Image (tube, rainbow, N blue to C red; front, side):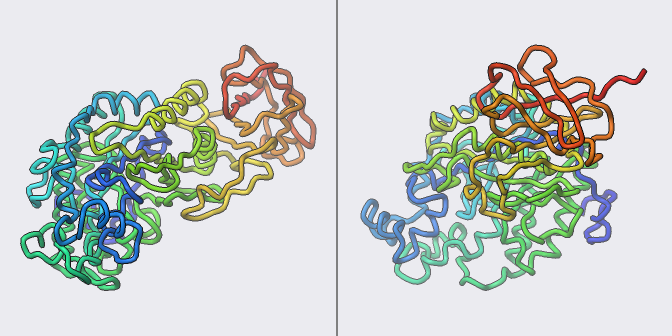
Length: 468
């Protein structure tokens, strides 16, 4: 283990603190891109499902490419060329979207590394594109002032391709065991050999690319991983100290004890403020993380609403895109990111570097707590408001425009004593000058400008009256 203040014990790791840059950043880009973008069918679990008899992917694969004994997942690798991959364009787009950090998938469940690994022959540097896709993006992202992170899903590879062990397929060919293996049965825990390899690969990723976020998927909750998670955290956090960079681990469920890393909810939100920073990772499309031909997109408005809600509850939003196999980002996804960027360019002071207020908000629309709830929320309506603070300034973001032209903020009524100062001015970001307001025991009432300053949510900036 690298020398430093952290030891591979939970007691030592409880001294970890989440870096300020992360708490300030609020919005990042996630990228699921890999060999699974070649078939572009179903979702990024195609490599598993194509070996699972009875699935749509299995039938599609046999019909399109032939039997899995003749054309297996490995045979997509030469078709994954990334010939139009332009990391500078990607980084420019993410910066225009208002992202403060970028987290590409360095290795998904399929076991194909998108980076230059000395521990595997099955990498984008040695096959397919024959480029260090992760390294190139890291340089481009940092050149534009954004923080670079990386996710690894290597843990799930233990069992991911085990469907191919149940019928004649190339998964059973010893020649490809270093790629497809172990393909262990469902329900079995990884052995020490696999866990040591997982730790080595993850530490290699850290050492080679210095990511300031390392994102793990859910299967690290498997009990066998626990001591290795502590070992990795100590190694990584000590590396961060050596580099002089704040670093963070993203985990799901209860893989890491509270306070030792950053909780991540997949496609999920919280119902209230969480004292520690947390993260919602979600995607611009509802039906996949990776590129597929049939894409069901969310709207930019819905994503902006989720961002505002998440930030009001002390969270960050990690928004995923899925590029094509050739390295191009679909036009629809670029358009969504640019629309979010336009909103943030006008209203970002209510998002970046903010902290939660005493209450996250008010209104009738309920946000369901937990993972996989991101498409269950009803559209926000008049009266739905979210609060954030920056110093002495309070921001109240209206998630829908009141038809009568008046915003009513009940949380700012004098009876509740949440906002104890006298209100000095109220402005709307993007509108010119102060606007009229009145306050009594029940609410702060604000007369809105005649026209909307933007297309989605609308930020009221509330400042205290100056003392005599």
